Length: 291
Ligand code: GLU
Image (cartoon, rainbow, N blue to C red; front, side, top):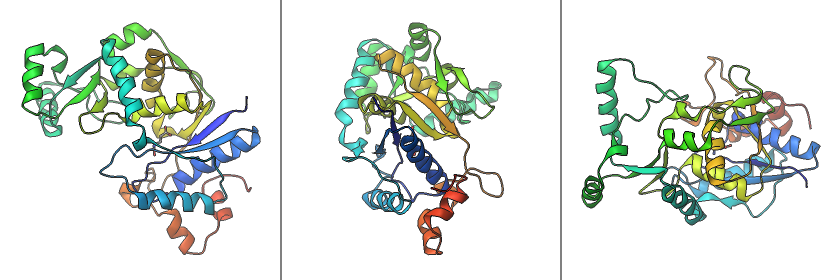
C-alpha cells in the first residue's frame, strides 16, 4: 500500500511561508515515496473560517506546483462523525461537561495563581482549574437548563489510566530534538476540551478521526504541533484507531525569531506572488530543495 500524506490547513487567513514549507514537504515526500497526497480543509471554527480563504488555499497550492487528490475533505461537512466519536468516549465514561465561560476560567486561574504557581500546557495556556468533573448530576442538569456554555472535557487521569504508557514514531524532531520513539505526555494538557455546544468537535478530535478515516500513514506538520501528538496518540488508543508515523519540521521564523503566524502579520504567499516571486523562490525561502 502506498503511504498517504496530508496537508491540513485552516481557511482562516492566507497561507504564508510556514504553510508553504509544510505543504511542499508533504508533496515532495509523497512523490519520493510513490505515495498519495490529500488536502484537508480544517474549518470546524465556523466563525473564523471562510470560503474565500479556502479558494485562496487552492490557488496558492496550485501556484506552488502542488497537486492533490480530490475530493477534498472539508471538516465542517462531517460533524456527525466527530459527534459519534465523542459519544463513544462519553459512553465509556471518559468525558464530562464543564460550564464556565472563558472569562470565568480566567478568573479561576487568577485565583489559583494568587495562591501559588499554576501549571500551563505545552502551548503556554493555564490548565483547566474547574471542578466540573465532580459536579452532581443535579447540578449538571440545572446548569444545562440555565443554558450555560457547555464544553465536553476529557477526564485525563482516567483516560491515561486506561490507555497506559504510549509513544509515537517521530521521523522529524521535537522542539528539544526529541526523535525516534517519543513518550506521549498527554497529562501535560490537563482535561482538554473535545467538543463544545456550538461546535461538536475540536482540533484534537477531528484530526485523529480524519487521519484514521482517510488512511493517513504519515503526518508531516510544523513543530508547533509536536506535543499535541501526545493527545492524538491517547485518542487513537482510546478509540482503537491506527497510528500514523509523525514527522514534525522546524518552523519558519521571522527576523525576531517568532514563528510566522496570520495573527502577527506574516507576509502571505499571495503578497510574495504580487511582488513577482515564483514557486522556485518560495521553495528556496521555505528551505526546500529545488523541484
Ligand atoms: N489545521 C492545523 C493548522 O492549520 C494543522 C493540523 C495538523 O496538521 O495536524 O495548524
